[in-house]
Image (cartoon, rainbow, N blue to C red; front, side, top):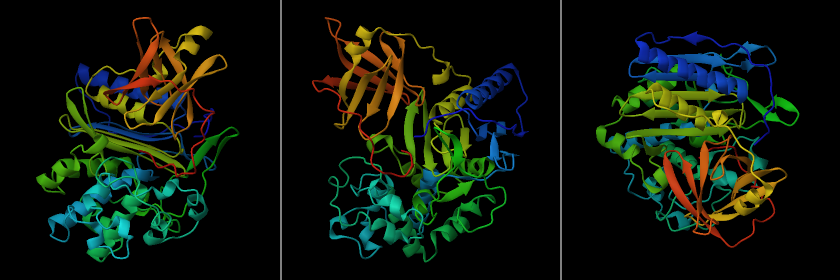
Length: 467
């Protein structure tokens, strides 16, 4: 991820504010304060919509849709969705199942020919919830060399078709963009239509989503935001990606208003049957449904997904019992939106939530930091490394980048870039024997192992697709 630097933010446009009683006014005040804080401290640029039931609490743009022309972001601005696309792909597959054109329990090879023998038993169900074992093509060393060029789904998939399955299909979770590009090919084969056409005719048009579509590079698209990246030298135009590459894994664009129409249509039963919606929003391995992350939080069920792609970052969340929609779209890649989205969800139901930027850090002594530094192990075997770095500490999950970590107290560490905390677990002698990861409403104990942290691991080439 690129480093953050301060840059000029333009004023956005607000629409449809909620007026009401004292509690609603408090909700709105906190909601506005959260986004204002993100804009000021994290330099958020994009658009935010928060709705509860039939009432829109906030729909506002922040920062610039085009820095070169000084055009502000607004609710009408169109953003690339990245992996938020996956829920539209999952819904499309379920629509085809409802029409009797496929069964998700069957192998994808029944419908898509020419697949490797190793994939012959991989089911559509396993592709939908990332348990297929098929390698992720955007994580290969060859991936970046194909990004600028138009590719058919089978050409992108070819990067990993000769690799063995990473594990027995169905036995574990591993996020794979390959699986969703393959689902896009499945939709095209079964329906006889291009993925872009199928989604438009079967989802966007029925739900009145007039500002959504497939983000073809060549299309002249009114109100499309320019995409940016932040680096050590400041803000730059984002790198180029041919949008045929992400396909059904990440190629759609939309607006905050259209995504609210999507959530209301999907979760209020206007698109799928109750059985299909239940299947889509059921947590399977690692809390993932079909194109959606699922979690039980504070007595309610929250579903959603993040996305990241050249120039853009997105978070779209829905709290089912309370009918709370939170949609955060940014035209700066690498923006960390998870904590802002969680905070807005909490504020919409008048619940307490502390943003990482609101946490106060304290200094630890060199001896305290040295006693914490070490290697901790996740349930899936990956390592979490805590290191002393100058006068502070860093954390790194195996396969990911290095992030600074701070102390809120002698026994609680927290990150600012990600909404996560580490509670130190000490033995009778006061030595740190484990840490408990607190993230997304869940707690996970990571025992300490007798391994020194290795030299800083640099992740392999990969697309910025999230989750």
